[in-house]
Image (cartoon, rainbow, N blue to C red; front, side, top):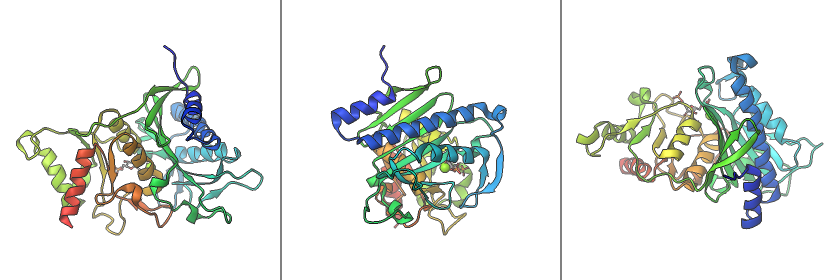
Length: 335
Ligand code: AHM
Ligand code: MG
């Protein structure tokens, strides 16, 4: 059986559909190469002395793991010299990283969560890298944080790489979702799924149930109804999964459907949610919508939200369309 590589897939997208400019193709290839390097560090684990905390905190006051920092450095180093980028922003950096003057400036902006699901690193459970690509819209001047504050619907591409039993790269350039599995012997990404579709209905939800007492009423209502099973208003039994790595939870949903929620809760009433709009919610929302699913913050479409700052947080409800619609409806009914 002949297999299609990531390079061939991108060249065909560029040639046949003409919607991937050369710079974007290079950008995606470079990100994929960086993910391969991160996968090697992840796989080495204790042997590579990459486990444990780095003894520092990021801008959000979270303790950084060694792999958070290593992955961030790999992505920056890989991407800054190619001429395809103007600047980068990362969950692990306070402010944007502008491409140094010694390199040509490209027309794209790259945003990433270099190592998502950090709490799973040391326990050998799936983790990942999430990325989002925007165009630099303002050509009049240099580059600043403001250039990044675009709604998710303006993304040119998005994806993630999940480091699990297999290393898989999942990508959208706005024409459906494709998955590539890393062939470790060959060192290449091989197309293993195309036109990925999320079923509209599901019997599986993903939420951190330990936060139940802090949830808002519409979230409680939805989960209570799921828990009531066959005898309840939904008339069916629901299953629950929570990996605590958004990449792994979203990967399951893209593979077999489901709903993922990280809603606002009363622990931090002033924050709109835990997850980051630009590094986590937007790229995942783009993938989910491209696969026929839906992503909201409980009330509005995630990709319509206009960020007011780089590290903005957001409530997230995404996955199978009919379930996301239901949860969103419960929020809107509650006013
Ligand atoms: P991180 O980017 O610091 O790893 O945090 C994001 C992760 C998500 O991947 C996951 O859905 C969530 O945090 C899990 O949070 P919790 O430990 O509260 O269940
Ligand atoms: Mg994260």
